[in-house]
Length: 340
Image (tube, rainbow, N blue to C red; front, top):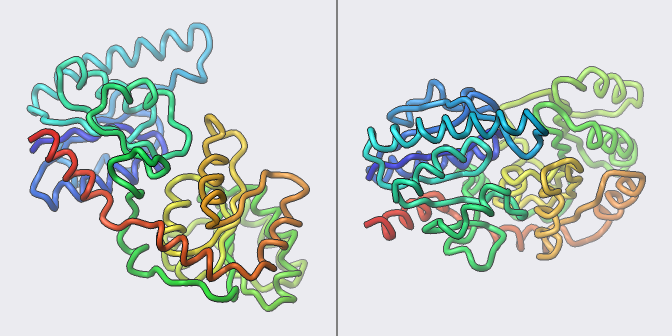
C-alpha cells in the first residue's frame, strides 16, 4: 500500500507523522510526506530515510491572517492543492493520512478531489478548524479524547512504555518548559524551589535555551541544588527518573507523561489555538489522573497543595491504565481494513 502522510507545522503533529511512517514500514508499506516550507516540517523530515519522497510546499496558516494576508494564504494553499493532486497521482497513492496543522490542507483536499480515502488524527481535545471541516469526509477520525474514536490512545514512542512505572512517593519533580522555555513554568519552579528543597524533593528543570542563564543564576542565589537544562535530548530518561511533573499541556508531552505513568500538574499555554492546551489538561483532570491550573497567582499555592495530597500512586496507576500501546500500528491496520 502506498500512503501519503501530510501535516505538521509543530513538533506535536510531526511526531505523529513519524510514528505513522515507522508503523507503515513495519507493515510492509511505503509512504511519501507532503508538508510546508514553514513551521518545523523541513527540520524533521528533509533528510529523513523513512519516506520514499518528501515535499515541502509553500503554505501558511489562514486563521490568524487578515485582509490581503488571508487572500494570499488561500492562494498559496490553492497552488499547493494543485501540486498535491499531481503528486498523489504520480505516486499512485492509495490513502492519505492527515496529522493536522495548516500543512495538511493541500494534500487533504487533493485526496478528496481524487476520491482517495482520507484518514485524520486529531491530537488535541479541541478539534482544529481544518480537521473539523474535513471530519465528515474522512474514512476514520482518530482522537484519544473521543469515546467515538475507532482507536483509543495516542501514538507515543515505545520507550515511554518500556520505562513506565507506578510512582509511589514523591522523591523527584521535573519542570518541563520546552526547548524554547516557558517563563510561567520557570517562575513557578523558582517560586517553589526552596520549599521543595526543604522537603527533600530533588528538582529537574528544563528551562529552555533563552531563559537558561537567568534561571541558573536565580537557583544559585537561592542556594538550591537543581539538575538544570536549557535543551536536552534525554527527556525520556529524565521523565522516567521523575515522580511528578509540572508541564505545559501540549498533546505529545501530555501523552508521554501519561504513558510513562508520571502524574502532572499542567499549566496550559494560554494563547494556544482554541485554548486547546487547557482542554487537553481538563481531560486528564476529569479522569482524575492529574491537576491543572491557569497561569496566575494561584498556581504556586495549587501546586504545593497538589504535592501534599497522598494520591500519587492512585493517579499513576490510572494513567498507566489509560495509556494504549501500539496505537500507530493500529492506525495503519485501520487503513488496511478500510482501503482493502
